[in-house]
Image (cartoon, helix red, strand yellow):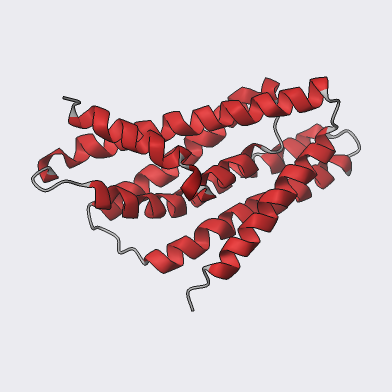
Length: 205
């Protein structure tokens, strides 16, 4: 029989990688759109910032410390994707306008870490609905263990998605000779278009 830890580890991994709930995957895709494979450390930090954010609100929501308005959260999730995609385009344009001054550009691009953390808070509240629905009667005393396992599972799933995205970008840049500008515009544009449709469908008022 699988342990409680193993069960919730798998639940976390499967939840973040579930194509039926692709909004979280789409957010990670948008986050990674402006990075190359050689920048994997930056991406790892970015994903960790996102994990810290969603871990905080997931725990608070699971413990009923903060109230969750599901309809509002479901609307805000595609808004975070749209905002990230638009920022990617602005950041890349900013790089082209720095005339080689990458110091200024790097300061601006580091805002991505802040956005990942803040937007992670929103996604965590979205995760909480699924997590609370998976809690079994009589397991309340193991809540901390379940939260830890679920978050680790989500993190492993995120890193798997990141690895796939960076692999595709590597193939695009090095084998297909796609320019990074075109890659960023294509990926960010596609993410923004899908997110906009999702947001319009989920307007809570």
